Amino acid sequence: EVQLVESGGGLVQPGGSLRLSCAASGFTFSNYAMSWVRQVPGKGLEWVSAITGSGASTYYAVSVKGRFTISRDNSKNTVYLQISTLRADDTAVYYCAILDSSGYWGQGTLVTVSS
Amino acid sequence: DIQMTQSPSSLSASVGDRVTITCRASQAINNYLAWFQQKPGKAPKSLIYAASSLQTGVPSKFSGSRSGTDFTLTISSLQPEDFATYYCQQYNSYPLTFGGGTKVEIK
Image (tube, each protein chain N blue to C red):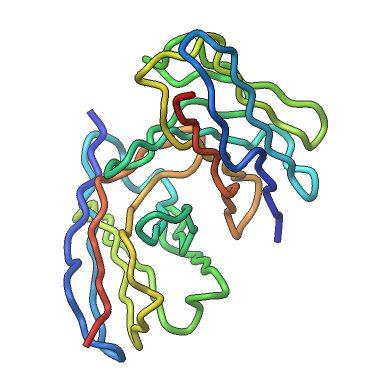
């Protein structure tokens, strides 16, 4: 059974940093590109970033480029999202997901940016 | 970037109704289109991939189709458990993009 389990969310002050993790199991992790998607409570889904299976290529939404960094450790079956210079509008539930024909999602982790 | 224009943004329907939701891509995405269902407080659930292929375990009342850059999700007979928000998403190219969502409410 495929499982994606996010962690690392929480309350952080504006300008602060956080590292989100997504632990994967139930499939050959290195074969799949992984994405992060966020959702402001009550709003729609916004794709944030993706990384290829090997980790060789990364992609970012314009809204986060330069502030967010995606990475993965295939030996630990884990993908990360380092988020920095946080702003109030980064407050959202952050999901990791496989956004191809598989369509698997984690349960999400809430990031709240507030002083 | 590929824009996904989803319509309507909301609809009211009754149990047993046939419901259709549309997504239009701003450029060709071949069949690289997925549909998700999301209920309040839950992660999205994949319903359809490759425009018209049903994910394992998804009931056959859900179907997807494509005409050029227009994509449709149809629910043949709406049931109480189907009241939710539905999203389309293209995975043809980065940046990946979602439609704005369609909230299906009880009439």
